[in-house]
Length: 357
Image 1 (cartoon, rainbow, N blue to C red):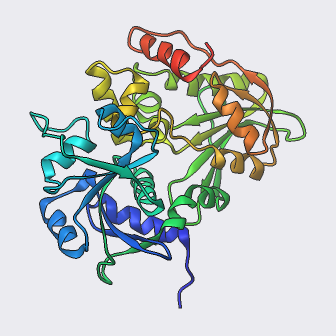
Image 2 (image 1 turned 180 degrees about the horizontal axis):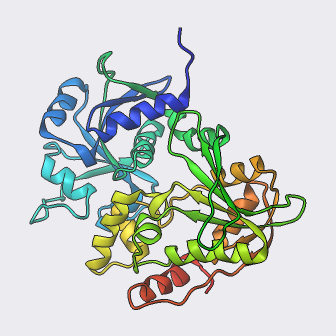
């Protein structure tokens, strides 16, 4: 019998959800069949309805339910149903703030109740899949062709993946502002997305190391977007490390504060419609920041670093590393001048997210 590996189990489920297929989430008591709303089709909705012993229900974050004004409780995850069923246009309208529905469907008869652990795991799996944090669910076991994943595997995925990181390659990479640099790649056991460490100069782990935690930003880092300050912070940090003599920049695979590139572009659409950077994430159903810094702490430990001087304007990063037993001996401000496109964005980060500028 094949050994049960929760990482591989979750990774397979993610692949199925991203292509719009059914997944079974189960525990020792029950199971749910789920479809990600992001890739929902009429055919799969019909299949879900056919296989379930209950009518389809919509499970999504309490954050999204709150911004819709349906429910103002503090439920982390809510389950929505309707006496006449959940048609596609209603599902799309509820789960996606960029829904193409021209008029809002009636929501008068919607029923909202607390999500159980299985239903909460369905939303977590949607987030891990970098899809909208919403799923259509029924109670049922489906058939043997539907991949199954334990709820406990989903909820522990981020922690297990971080602790399973291994160094898989390393190379000297002279950089524009730091010729003495090398890049080390770290990969989780399930073969998931790699995180990178850019090591500038010759680091001495016996002393506090100058470190920046930098979440990947395709738009800012690669194509020079002016909507954020990420590109300046990336290149500026490497340059400052070179001037200081050494440092480590961790390039973390958590685009858009952990919601993924597609959802970040959705958030940009919402910002263009008048929402600020925090409220746009909330409209999508995400927290204002979904990032996880366990991988960063694990990478530092594998590099022999336990004490750091952290280049950041974000106190949450200082706190997160501390909780992971990495001592932050100093916070090093990392500020660059705003431009007309990101000035409001930076002000919101300071006001609502506590960034220090």
